[in-house]
Image 1 (cartoon, rainbow, N blue to C red):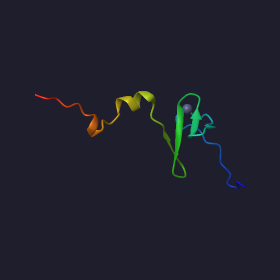
Image 2: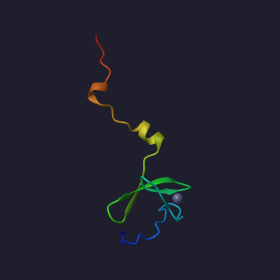
Image 3: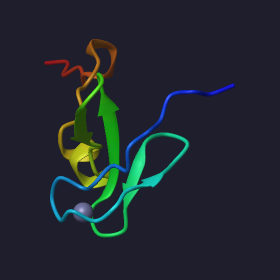
Image 4: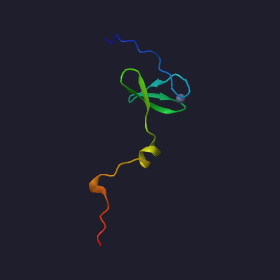
Length: 66
Ligand SMILES: [Zn+2]
């Protein structure tokens, strides 16, 4: 039985109550937030951010043959 009481989490950006999600907590305005440790919420990277900041694996580096 779950005895831990979860306080309502509020969006750090707008203060709206976050909806619990299978992967984190969702704000209708700001999307997904992830619980990091006991108290810290971090914004999940947006799809755009993931694309822009995607690391290229060494085996994915295009090889230029001279
Ligand atoms: Zn928000």
